Each structure stands twice: as structure tokens, then as C-alpha cells.
Image (cartoon, rainbow, N blue to C red; front, side, top):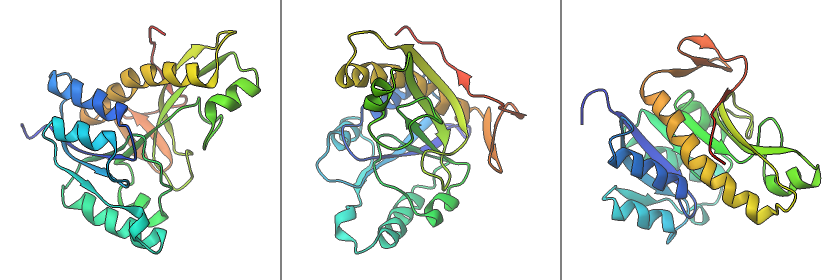
Length: 218
């Protein structure tokens, strides 16, 4: 590891397929990152097995063992900080964070969300896209702020919704898209191409007036 390598902690709650995409690209030498830890709020999930297979330190901070969101987030923050990350990546992490935790890692925390934000923050994004008869669907990578799924969007990828698409088929296509989109944006952060200034995302020092659109083969 060189001094330029970005230390990354990944937070998960489940399968960890986006984690795997980052692991694979790191292993292939395509990302200047070092995934120093994987932390899950749920025990016995596939994402922890992925970390173990890649010999990445992994821990569980089980949210069910805490009496409040604040106590849990305090414990989670302490767990994250012991790995001194440059970047915290949310990869299917399904907990709403307290303001204190978000502020602690302001400008150093990314999330990926399965919609073309600002459309459809929160859950059931595929169903909502179909119900509204959208022509396109996609995913967004954004800086994490105190507003749920409301931080400045850095980049998006999209595809056309087909007549026969269902929630399940959209979910599969979204994951394929995200496995290309998320590593690219994480790479930008590691290369100091993106930053957060106030509530504004910057790319190469210039304000991003709209998200970067990343083309995919989908």
C-alpha cells in the first residue's frame, strides 16, 4: 500500500454485491483503494463472508443490541474510527443515520441509491418507477448528508424500462449497473477528483451543476 491509497471502510446490512464489486476492482489493481474493514449491523450476512474470503477485517455492530439509535450510532462511529478511514462507503447499509454520525464523516461518506434522485428517495424505488410509468430507471451515487437520500448527487447511470419489466427484473438490472457505477465514483474520490463543499458536490474543483452520467451497456 502506498501513501496515496485511500483507506475505505464499507458498511453493509446484507448480501454485499456492491462490496464484492469494490473488492474485485481493488484486487485487479483498478482502484487505488485499500478496503481496511467491512462493518455490518446484522450478523451472519453474505457480505461478511465476502469480506472473510478476501481477508478483509470485518466486524458486526448489531443494532438490535442497543436501546436507541443514538447509542448504536455512537458504537458504530467508534468502530469505524478505529480503522482511520479516508472514506466510508455505504453498500446496501439499511439504517437511517443520526445527524451526529453523518456530521462526523461529512464529505467522506458515499451512498448508492437505486433511483434517479431526486426521484424516489427511500424504499420501493422499482415499484414506484413502474407505477409512475417512467421511461427510464437507474441509480445515483451521492454524498451522505443529514437529509435521507438527499445529499448532493455525484453521478448516475440509467437504462430504459422495457414493456415486460417487473420489480424483480429492474432490481437485477440495477445491480448490474451499480457494480460499474459505484467503483467508478469511489475511484474518483480516491483520486481526489470529487469533494463536498457545503451542500455542493465538486468535480475537479468545479461545482457539479448536474450529476455526471455514466454510460453502461444495459
